[in-house]
Amino acid sequence: MLRNCFATLGYFICTGIMSLFALAAHAQAQHVDGHSPYPDTSYTTWSAFVNTRKTHSEIQIVPELKSKAVVEKRNLEYIPAGGKYIRWIDAFYPAGKRGKKHPAIVIIHGGGWRSGNRTQHYPLAQHLAARGYVCFTPSYALSTYAQYPVAIYDLKEALRWVIQHADKYQVDTSKITVLGFSAGGELAAFLGTTVDNPKFLGPPNKLKILKPVPIQAVVDIDGTLSFTHPETGEGDDSKKISAATYWLGYSKKDSLALWNEASPLTYVGPHTPPTLFINSGVARMHAGRNHFIKVLDQYHIYSEVKTFENAPHSFCLFDPWFQPTVNYIDDFLKRVFK
Image (cartoon, rainbow, N blue to C red; front, side):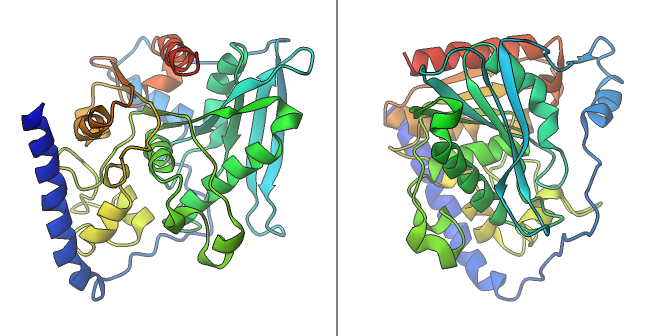
């Protein structure tokens, strides 16, 4: 145990020293503009299916669940933007008599902070709603529209929207979970580790009126915990500009401090909620996870790791992994919220 503590301490000291050296370089770094007037549609469920089927011929796309036990409200505005860039959110909740409050899950889609769509997780939201959860699927600013940390601000506003509409959707506000896949998993972990951090509550001009929203659980499905950890695959711009570089606006070599700042591992501590990691067989997708768990262990914070050995990165979108994923989430949250 003592050895683990020193190893973890050593990692943070090293990354901290590297960040200090990188601060001076940041002022002279070249900004990478990721803006585009057109959405990036490179990552969809279908494109992931076509790519994954090459190595896993047995996979099947999970269809939407049609059930009288689930009520849906789609295409709700949680940030009206005068027609310029509206942030949307969908609600999926158990049918039945009003009065009983349910745990809520905010589900954040992946796609390299640049592509992907909230509709990819409609099946997951529907299946979890059928098990008694109120699920929300928000959109957020991708790097084609705005770079880090605007996506963080958006998603924290989505959480405030959930709290504001808790009575309407029968949400138990003492049982809020953020869940994300891939880039969404990184965002979920970031939200869970920065609840009270004033720097990430929202745009600087609104900080005085914004309040933090407590998060009681995090589910990270194959999302990185650190952009700078030795295990990471993020930041390789040798062949083309990487997704993380587009999102952060600077390459890793030009602004290591920024890349550390955007990493959930930087903020994990005594106030981090219980966390479930569901991972594929692609190790680089959960870079920093073991260090993250060591910190949780130091503070006696509950965590679980579920791994689908040899599964592809996009496993949670497809059978045969979808239903076990739903089971893992449900079992974990029942233990956390018992």
